[in-house]
Image 1 (cartoon, one colour):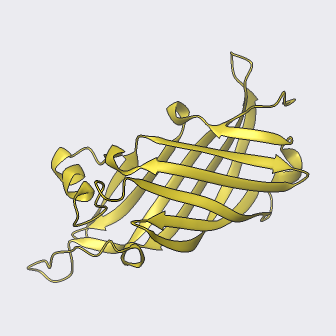
Image 2: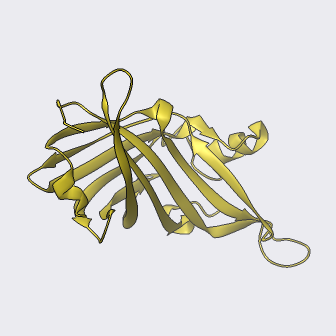
Image 3: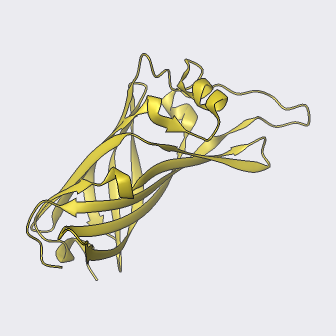
Length: 184
């Protein structure tokens, strides 16, 4: 089914209490560290099959379940949250990509470095919540090289290799609420 033709025209706001913007990266080359950003806002629009998406993430809300690691990630070694407090993504195109899938291409800005990335989203369904809100679900993943965005800190391991992988997987689990009276 074409996702864009299924969605009603209107604006859709990301519900942060029912969504997740996260990431994972290989640590010591043997396991993955996962984290999330707990503060973000975003919205999308659909009009006659044409869609757009934007999101703004607060860097200081990073949460990897380790206060020391979170502090290091906020430091100038990585995100430099004091100088660059926001990460942004603004779509440049949204296209259907097969059954229940859309590909969103857009500009990701981290530390004032902007690069085009592509995120494949799966449309996971629609429901009306107990408060009468029309909700639309999407899950997406994209891989980036963190060095492309100036996130270059690393440490060599005694056994060879590096402490943190260059490749980072971006993970999106989105519950969007329609601000139109959408029929579900």
